[in-house]
Length: 498
View 1: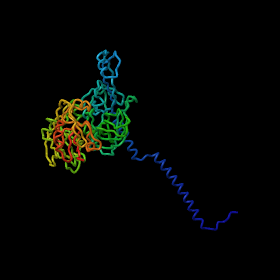
View 2: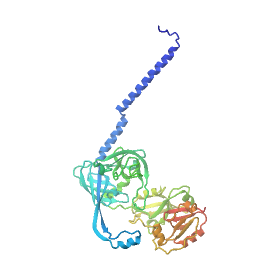
View 3: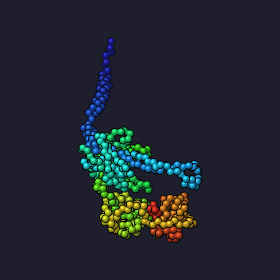
View 4: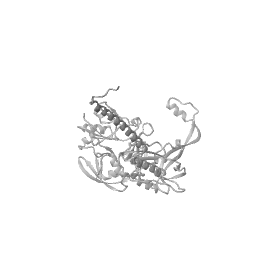
């Protein structure tokens, strides 16, 4: 027979246990319901964003084209009746007896993207996509194929305009305003990467955000293109995307995809695009078949660093240092000198070399600009008329001189040894023969090593005293006391006393 509970104190504990179990069941049921609800019914915001991506893909994607190029290269086949020798002299001697073979040729194929900008069939792409092409073929997303003609190209900005003769209606993209772009905005990259593999004319779409603005890619001796003030995005950009549009969430083109930063050869989340506002004027000129003219001052400049700012008695590193002046250039005619620090252009602050380049790109040949210049701790105003950028970008401030005969290396000074420029030195360091002295050795741990000077540098100035040869150099260093300002063809450096 069941035992009757007479201890009424147990009831509160039983009730609490029962309520806890009820609450657990309700919580689990609520979570499951929420999960199914979220899965079954996305939020209005999520649906709205998804719809926006779909709309952009359809509207802009229909204007994005695949571009394939063909370039024929010819070479002369040679047959050698003799074996090759280990020493170069023997090879050079017997190569005189080679047998000329038939001239051969092979076709080099290139791929890229572009986008139509009007109903007349004008298409924007990168210059490097169509560079040297004998034939340009365009494939539309609907499969139509056209042979395109080159209207105009500009290697410096890496922009080109090609044209097709439309048969039927064409979709075209709307150009937006890249000045309104902000970090964190949605970014949609459209193009046809790996078109040779997928064999499908429909473009691909990748989505990310604007990750940075006003980026620049370093210039190299092998590249004359100017990649400055670029838009950076983490929207995946792959080989073949070059020339395609970067658009915002509204479908407006804000940039032209131009490059990726990669260690693997594929997308690593750092892509770059030319801002559409920077491209608009160039595009208009190229559509009319005009040659793009760039403004030019004729100065070789460098960024300031802490040592240079301290040497010139400046409170910060703002401005750009003029290290050389090109002869007969607008800068020379206006009275600019090496050692001047440009801090403004038309009252707009110049922070570094990039900001000066961007400001100059907005000017036209013949414009007069007012430069704010610091010289010997005093502020000057210099008016310069913008000149035409010369075709030969290798122009330097001093004329080339004939290599001299070998001379003795100077004694070490602050860990630095230099000598006159000779034919042997020119060949060894692979430099142009110019006046000045060349650095042949740096003592480890010396002030010279800490300054950043390195073997192969050509020194043309020591503490504002010109140096044309080892004799000038020896005289100049005898007069130096304290820190020295050394002018090299890579720019100025401060060589400390200790």
